[in-house]
Length: 228
Image (cartoon, rainbow, N blue to C red; front, top):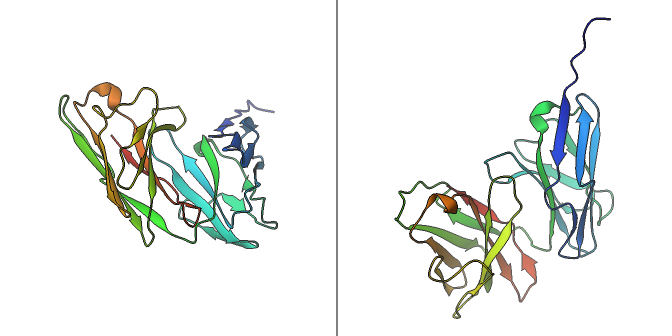
């Protein structure tokens, strides 16, 4: 037998474990020989209708692979080639790589939502700025009213960190390490919020996400990202 080269697929499961007390993703880390089948398990106890699988490659934002809004109905996105997913029971949404390849090495995130298809839209998608300047990121709720909006930051090879939460007509609440002076937030109405990054320096480079919630209906909407 000649020399054999074995490639491994390293899967880092973003947010693995219990998220917000209701979404459990396993295993946490996985190394797999190329060509074998791999299944990532996701279970939620929210009793939410909608579930999602995302993939994140280094330096890029989250990309949707599959989503399911009802049992036995799974919709695929453009990057679903090489993957399969099933939703035989409401709490479970396993993702399978039918023949794991090196180019599938990534961070994977499972999420659940009670939303009925409402989305958030974020602009611009990418921004470049000189040191000392300011950058504004806008977030809009599409086809629903968002009484609460959330701003997150993700640095390379790290998980999402909540920066601040804003509610209509009140000052934003900032998490430790983030301030109003550095990251002023506006949330003037139920469909719009903006985050400004002031006095930009290289340490501010990262992926910026916004999320929205209609508290009256309890709908958590999928985050959108801005990278620079």
